[in-house]
Length: 279
Image 1 (cartoon, rainbow, N blue to C red):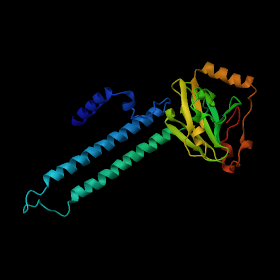
Image 2: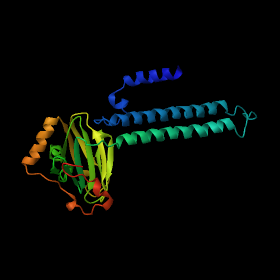
Image 3: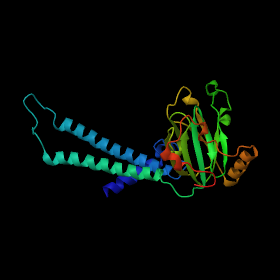
Image 4: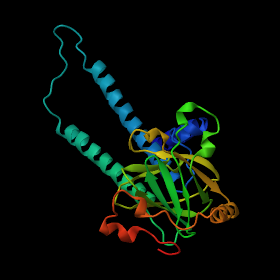
């Protein structure tokens, strides 16, 4: 009953807080798996806070309960307490094991790959911008460095490379790099993955919200790392189809392949690269 009361009280208190607080001040998730990350993040913080309160309470209690009361009055001394020592050894091990197990579970959810995703995008990092190959549609978008970032001029966001995705769709990102290590990060996906020269990394998301979201490189990749920005625009399917057609109309057909890379793709990575209209 005590745990139920604590849980009910905590839920009541949190319900009166802002949305940012209830998601642990993480960005608002716009993918299906993002909510799992928020729940896990909050659970770990609650567990850590509970342990902290217990430890602080024991410290304060021991300070007052075993303080020296006079020059000749010493508190009871003892060298060891076997049950207590077993308790504070076993309990932390169990806690770490539980957190580790949940971490693996959430990680497996984030890296789960479904067959035949709705959209496959080969995201290519380069110094210091991005190329987006829409694999099944056999079209591409090539970005350029945001060189005017530090000028503070309005309208910069509209000039950034933009990746367009349909809402309520399973999207696979095939991540490669042309030169150095980059990292593909859309903060509101609550997930990122490195892009390593000569290798292919893959993850999938299911989009749940329409809107335009910031993207950036999360790996220090050189002098203009801070200018390696892009947009992700999640739109209805009809608008996505119209965007793909606009790329065809502009002649941006085919794929910007590894011929532009500074390093060759490693042999064991060849099969990971998907081909247009197939996997």
